[in-house]
Each structure stands twice: as structure tokens, then as C-alpha cells.
Image (cartoon, rainbow, N blue to C red; front, side, top):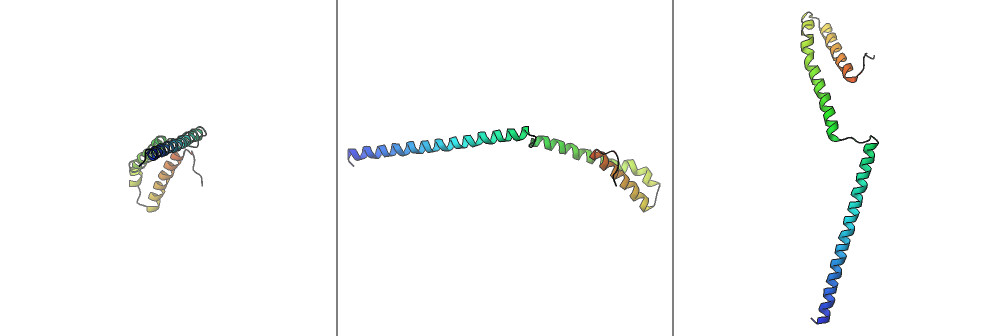
Length: 115
């Protein structure tokens, strides 16, 4: 290979590396710009109240489920005496239904039953 050709090849190699580096830089700049735009978009959605933190949702739902569980587990204890005084299936059903309806009303924040 001649000296001149070697220099041309070296220049081409440098140009290719510079182009590749500049191309990678542009790609990273585009990625960074997108990330910044996404961040701003999410912050705006939070300010508008359209997004909430996952941990907050999990805590609220855990509290709701635990409240429901505690109240359901309390039904047998709170009704045992009343239910032991009757042997009529319809009366037992009515007592249980009233207890469940009351529980659901309490959970929904309503004070009286809607028909």
C-alpha cells in the first residue's frame, strides 16, 4: 500500500469514527429530550390530579380490604345470639342480609339504605 493511500484510509477511518460518534451523540440527545418531555408530562398529569403514586393506591386499597375483612369477620360474633333464638330460615336470612347491607352502607359512606 502506498503512503498516500494509507493516509487516505486513515482519514476515512477517522471520518467514519467522527460520524459514528456524532450519530450516537444525536441519538442520545434525542433520548434525553424525550425523557425530559415525558417527565414534564407526568408532572403535569400529577398536578392535574390525573395520576397518583402506586404506593398511595396500594395503601388505600390495603386499608379498604382490611376494614372489610374485619367487619365481615365480626358478623358471626355480633349475630350469634340473635340467630340462636330462631330456627326459621327466612328470619335467619333477613338478619344476615340486614347485617351485610348495613356493613356495605358503612363502607360506602352512606347513612341510609336506598331501595
